Figure 1 (cartoon, rainbow, N blue to C red):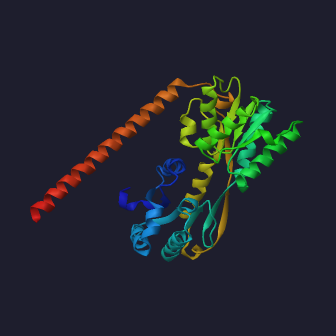
Figure 2: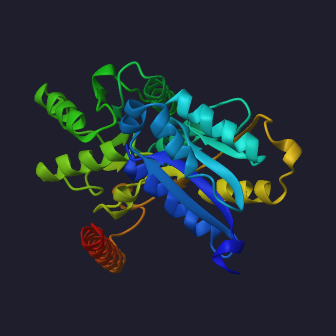
Figure 3: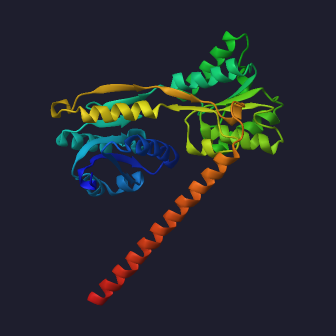
Length: 333
């Protein structure tokens, strides 16, 4: 099969959340190997696109005028703009291809709905039931955020089922990021907070920060305290210890997407659907389920080195192209 024969999946996103973007793209690439589908990612700088208005949007949409288009995958929450998402949905309808929407829900799309509550419940039950932890600190996201508050309530409910509780002073808010998490940890221990049996975090980025903070206090994870998060981002997998987490079942999600595109009929364009995507629990080193794997770490570092070499090669090739092009322009003038 030649490149021109392959069916194109146009992935529309922005650079603002590159970790989650890479997580999903890597899984999509794996899912499409040998299938005849080819993912083509056309990311953009959202702020630049919005500031330049219609002119920039027309340029962006022109990039999707590609042959053999089988469908669009839109990172709705990363894009965030109803204007941009709306234009891309219109484009898909004009071309009579399916549009798969992540994180947001729109009319005329196959909306991919992640079962976050189910995923976080799997993580907490693993720490509480499989590891026997009854004394937890909950590292929540943004105070008042619906996802964050739901995870606090769920943790409290599971602990109460097992005869324990989650006092409010053992709920700290890390705002889903590293610096706020460090401030929250300093505040908790600075106010006399005790070392719990485990930390459950509302995402992996905060779980990584908890591990780093504990290492600075000479507290060993997982021997002295368990740590877990949710999302399944690549830095969590490559961290030492690797973070116990849950992530969307990408094998199910992309398998279903590819099947829908294979069976797609033009008359299906414009219909609204919801596709529920379950989460899978991934027990790793930070809870003690897996031991530190030096071979895996070495292999990961080797892969990253090769990727860096390839990146350097492409930058060099681009530099040579620009230099030759500039020389040619000067010679013509």
